[in-house]
Amino acid sequence: VGWTAPALARSSYQSQGTLKLKLEHRLAKDKILTNNNVNVEFGNTSVVLSGTVRTLFQLKTAGKLARELANGRAVVNEIAVSAPDVPDSAIEANVMRRISTQAPYTVFDWAEARSNKGVVTLVGWVNNQLHAGEYERQAERVAGVKKVVNNLKYVFRYRHLAWKAVRLIYGFGQLFPGSSLRFNPPVHVIATRGMLILEGKVGSPGLGSLLA
Image 1 (cartoon, rainbow, N blue to C red):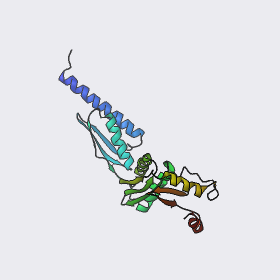
Image 2 (cartoon, rainbow, N blue to C red):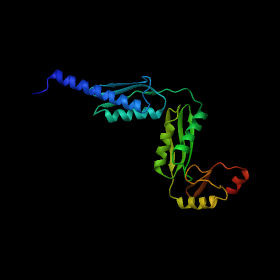
Image 3 (spheres, rainbow, N blue to C red):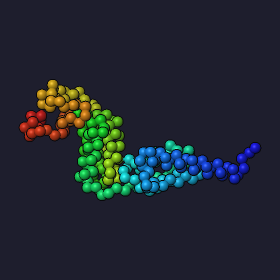
Image 4 (tube, rainbow, N blue to C red):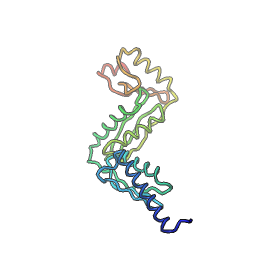
């Protein structure tokens, strides 16, 4: 027995309704959908998302989840980031706090966040290409960030020079006892184009002069 047109329509409608419920469940599970802030519309050829979220990361995640459940439909993401106005200085501090505590931020990495009305530009150097992407994702999680421009540079050619500098600076811990070289150490060492760049903070001007 073949499918009749009304039966096909009911099947399509039920499939769309089921997929919509699944997507809304995923959005709620990831705390993206709260208090009906996001609307989901499943059509025959497209999925349309609308509403507001607090962070750029939530916006992108909503689109990603929709694509996973779209079943061949085009995804139109009309969600907007709506968060209280946050001063650029606070955004910069919050971005760097996340990068230095939630991402691999080693002695061979250095990043700075510069915010202009919520548009954050990441500058600096990374010793692993994956770190640049992770720093960008951490910035997207900060409230008030509307866009991230990733200008981080990947440096690797002079790693032997960087290692020599690290051994001289940290030695056996006499300058920075108890410091970890792996997670946000006090001094970061970047070797690029045959030059050494030291970034970070030390306890006194005298110690900074000694390092230089």
